[in-house]
Image 1 (tube, rainbow, N blue to C red):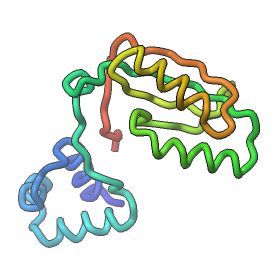
Image 2: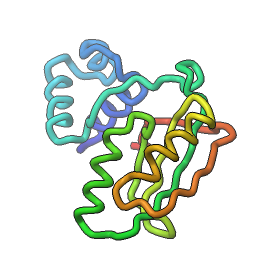
Image 3: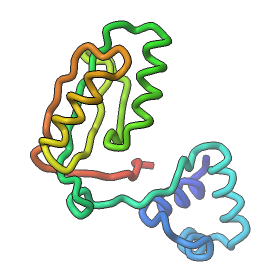
Image 4: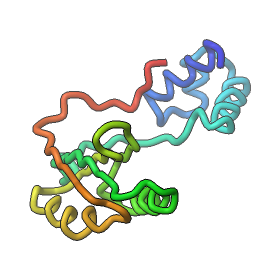
Length: 150
């Protein structure tokens, strides 16, 4: 990746909905070379997806909960089953395998504390291999960005 590739990526992070024409103008390339570079970045997996970031409050999901999950066992079958299940739960918007006292941390968005309690009792505690869930409710979001410092 060179500086022009980074310029394309920085521009796309700031304005993911730009047309190819607008993108090429912003970065100072003609349309075809810009398209080729972007296509190459997409094929290499550097551009994972383009997304619109919604306001949680605006869509009725004002509560963010960070759930630390511990597993009973750490065999490959349990880990893979747990991670597959994470992908199927739409309220879990991020999930990371972590080092430390927990095995995973998940960011969960819900409409209310009562909704989270239901999710905890009916889903999280029944996930494959889960032995413990420690939840922390966010009081306020200070920063949210999808832009990487490139």
